[in-house]
Image (cartoon, rainbow, N blue to C red):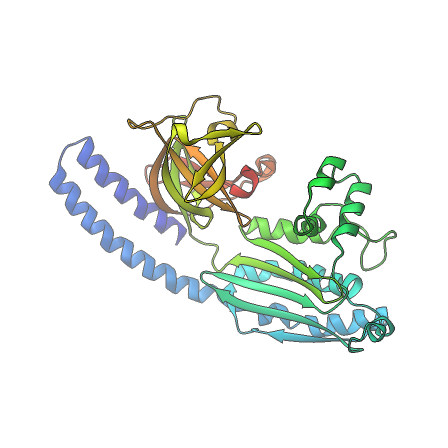
Amino acid sequence: MGELVVAKNSLLYLSKKIDTEYEIPQLSKEMKSQYSVVNRIAEEMQDAIMQVRMIPVATVFQRFPRLVRDISKKLGKQVKLLIEGEDTEADKNVIEALGDPLIHLVRNSLDHGIETPEDRVSKGKPEIATITLRAKHEADRVIIQIEDDGKGIDPQKIKRKAYESGLISEETLEKLTDDEALNLIFLPGFSTKETASELSGRGVGMDVVKAMVDRFNGTVSVSSEKDRGTTITLSLPLSMAVSHVMVIETANRKYGIPMDAVFETVRLKKENIHIFKGKRTASLRGKVLPIFFLNDLLELNTVPLTNEDGEYALLVLNIRGEIAGVVVDNFLGTADIILKPFSGFLSSLRIFSGTAIMGDGSVLLIINPKELI
């Protein structure tokens, strides 16, 4: 299916070449109309293949009742497990990759989150704690939630522990909000346990979850309330086969940016960018945005271009719920691509999530927006 998408894209490139280089507009027009037919058939075929690859999350969820029973017994805690939405389906690759991260998250809830029966009774809670494993669809993503009614996470304790472990500086410690502090649990080597046990304390676990989610172009978030519990939410794409990207140009080079990170594209006048505390900002629809030049972020050492009206091409990105503006030279439209992740030595280049072969045979680098800024 992936090969078919690449071959299909080459037809569009050829029709443009016939029009511009060979100047046969009539043939180009006929080829374009034929391309739209092939495109429709390919999309229908792709949907059919995706359906075949879909399997229910129950295949992963069914291993947890026993796991919860065994671990809670070992810890002397009383826990019941609720499973919701086990019929929710997602791509086979996504479901298979969920196994290990979910084990880490459930073990964490049992070890760190759930209190002993005595502690729960003293807080006026039911003696038996509840862990809920939930799956649901939202647009073209599958949402997995692990929710417990334990003691919650204390952001102050997290900040202090991260500082003591040398994972954050004193300056960062003072600036961090409570919500940002909760995300420190995903740092490699972070643990709130003083000594390692069979279940936790080695500083691996949550960073494994984060790495898996990043690999699949997903997001992970934490919400917690003291003595009320913690919810960890994983959001993953339903399908891994074909990605939709926006193709942009900067410093005479083309790059792809995943469409699910693109909030909007606008033109911004040069004089509307202001320097505030050494950082570029601009006001867009009454909201102040931080502005970055893609050339600077990729260390290309060239000045971004403007159009005849002195306007920059601004890509407004949604990165982990935050909106930021990235100035590029030009927008070149969108494309369906097959993302090939880097392997070997290049896999450490986190700023790019991989490559794709375009219709003209060229290789397009796909930027990972989460690592860009």
